[in-house]
Image (tube, rainbow, N blue to C red; front, side):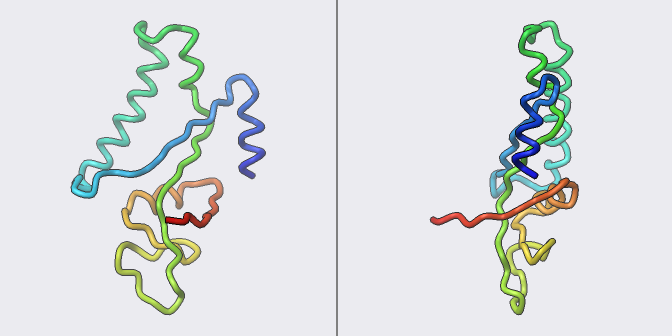
Amino acid sequence: KLKGLLDASKKKGSEVGLMLSERFVNLPPQLVPTLHKALSEDIAWSCTTPECPLDERPFYEFENFIGVVRCFHAPPTSEASAGSEGIGGLTFPRPEDEAYLKKASFFFSFPVVH
């Protein structure tokens, strides 16, 4: 599915945005909706403002986003202590990360070595 999404992005007007989700630990979660709204408004502003060159505006007309969030595979018998127990046995340290997953067309996880 990811390959299909990226292949489709090669067509004109099918831009794919990359969103890396990592907020500061001490940032209050109450600010998250405002920050997400500001991101949406910034993209819309870039598509309409005279300050953004006309040849750059098409790059802001996203058809899809690829989001990268941090999650953990929780053992089936243990309780999730850091965040909420989400989809497919995944645990999310921040509630907005799980919300992204619930809205996603598809998702997958992969291991990261520290």
